[in-house]
Image 1 (tube, one colour):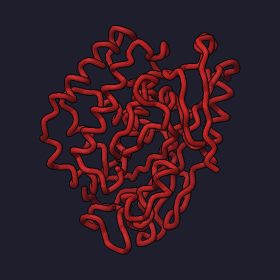
Image 2 (cartoon, helix red, strand yellow):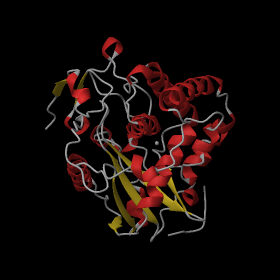
Image 3 (cartoon, helix red, strand yellow):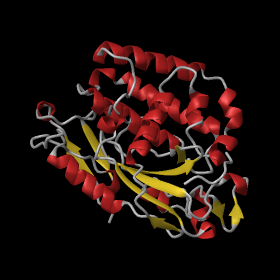
Image 4 (cartoon, one colour):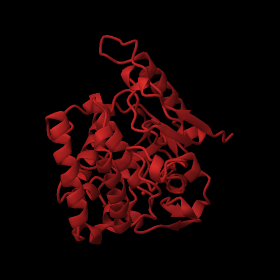
Length: 318
């Protein structure tokens, strides 16, 4: 069921601990904004509502055919990769480093974009970093990834069971809307039996370790599912749809960061929550996810960047 919801936030909610950038937002069910009043916490300061959201996110994660679930004990390293990608996206002249956080197939497809002109991107990054330090008294640097990417970010770990089937279902669609698209528009490794790019770059052989991460709906932005693959020597990397180019990624990122910068006066008071908001934008740019309807022009929120575009061969590592 695609039930549309409309939420009007009063100024008083900000005083209760709700951290949002948007005065109003309309969204589909899978883009429902998480409303969190941090009233009950455990000994680690984790609110009861976060735990509920984490459980809900975990329930929504499921590997497609070709994969099996397996507890790899890699939660911390996976969260560290989310932090790495976020930091690289908001660092001067690090667009090539950001691409380095992707799997072999994506890195090779985007290799020409690594040396492209990033002047406009650098200018926006500089603006964000200056305003960030002015507001929070620190550089943009996630030094506690488990505090930023906490229990709200559910993780499902597993491995490849059937490579031929897995390649037709990976990476998984980032949103329900993307899942509804025709198979040839989802950017999977294999489309209608045809390998997209070099088969040696896909890294989906039997036993390959993989993971899914559920980014919860928040800040007026939709929930996302990220796909990750483990590569040598010991690195989790993000797997993007195979129909996104490096130039498209750069354009998406500039659009999102431009909007984040323009809403600096509405950044959350809590720095960790602000990191989550910025990372949410970055992940949307990576996966070519459009903003929810109702977030355009004069009523845009601080994370709603409007409609945007979308997401190397090693020896097997598990």
